[in-house]
Image (cartoon, rainbow, N blue to C red; front, side, top):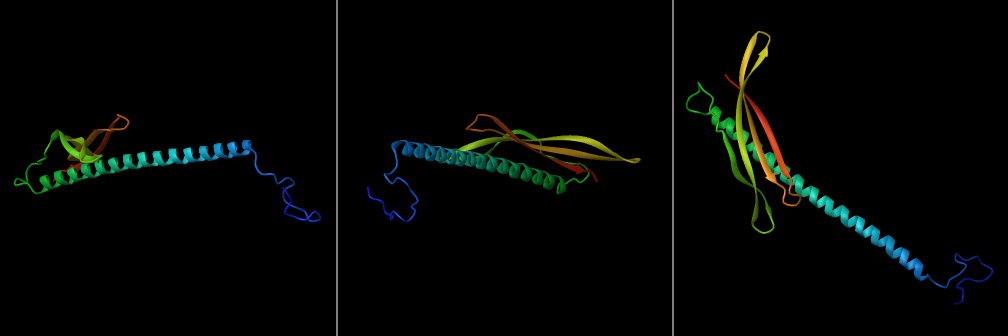
Length: 154
């Protein structure tokens, strides 16, 4: 190969014969590691995004149920007692896996009555806890979102 530059002017490369097979292999290896790293990062981000979406959906289901309990209690026919709709393991659709295959979660509502003391005064209130449970289809782990609301008696 003939040099591109004149002999009296400095050139960037002393040898312009091309690249060796070893340099091509090292470059290919470095690019493969970068592509695999980016792919793993994208897969992890997608998995985390799906998990966050399901947690948010479960939180919205639980908060909606607590709002429903508030409505049932506030607008009941008899204002002299607190009415709450307690139940266990009611199925709700949390998300869809694939095409029209629902991911079911179980929703439960429990009630506990307690008393709060403030100085010499006693305040009775009801603790309503809504629990949404489901099994993650990818990892098989059980996931739980629990929300609590306190309802003070009038």
